[in-house]
Image 1 (cartoon, rainbow, N blue to C red):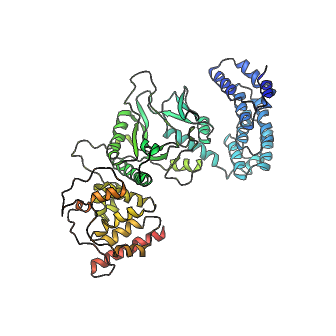
Image 2: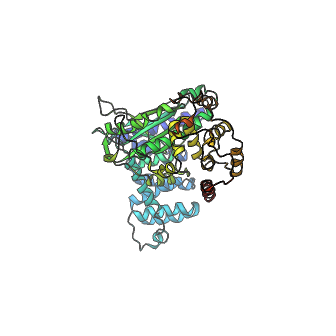
Image 3: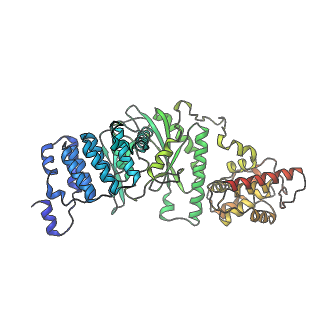
Length: 534
């Protein structure tokens, strides 16, 4: 009994996904091409395909070498599902191959009735790219302004250059949601632009094996996953701990990387955390990439509570017949969670915007990467923070020496709001420094709900001594070790990190008493103006 008849008896919609997968594998292997063509021509199967399946079926027909039949299938599909943009794109590409100019003109006229101007422009740009003469008015009239298609191809090529892995193999992700498991199956050929389009559209999800056959890599990755304890049995105050750790993680990885001559690209992975990609202008030895990215991990992982860091690749070279580690390509859908990954520095989550963002990312020169070695290695200040650190040296010392305070400052820079406890810690430490008003306004001006008058009011109420380290750890639920500082007046507090700190140096009042105070108030006013302009 044939597949369709059997399905009709059960009165269930037929599922041809397994059949299509088998046909695809046979065509790729060059097996039973004649038998595959006969199967692909069966109208009784085609009539029961969904529009998405019919699109995939037309691609299999093309793979089998029957372009005329594929064109008829796509023409039927665009007629039945005129809003299915991918079918129009597929049909337009096929007509370019067939070089059927009358059909091209007919397609453009038909598309203009159903599709938006931008998509029509994309189709026209495709034909123009395939070298149709500018004198053909039916195509040329609307094609000149539309360089979008070419730009997209350039962006796709750039993406593949940035995330190039092993030359002869990549991997496809699978997921079984019932068992909550996922994994990858090797695809033993080079990745194509068409594969990338499938990945970006969410139809399929691919990963790359980072190690090339010569033991070099185009990229290294720090994988930051939420710790299991925060997923299965989250501790008290888990939400605030994760929020502070996330802000600190992003801030420190960027700062340390730039010190070393690298520029990471941060991506939400679509799963349990984030990927920080280190992209190199040309392939470098895996050992050097691992040393550089490993040095970044070494300087931050002990400060984190909510995230576990893992380095990829894990090998300096091949030791057996394996393919090495793989990582899911950015901007794809995680098959288990259904979430699409994205570059966190780009607010626009559309694929085109994300690809344009990648074009602006600077790839690292492998010969200029600086990896500190030995305890006497010089500390290179993060160039983007030079001005800030020169203007506010107290904050620089505190954020480097006190991890809880450093995490609160990192939260400020993400334009989030502080919790009552975080603000209390900030005020009862930095609020007791000689330049307290300037420093507090500078930090709070970066938060989401900054109110300068309210900040001044809170500053006037600060009294007493700096909050001790034990109290800070208790309020924030921080489990890290206390700072190794010499006690003064019987307890340890963060302000001891500042060599010339003297108790009683705060500025509880905004009153201008001398020239120094006037300058500080002017600086604070500039901070407020800058905040307003942003």
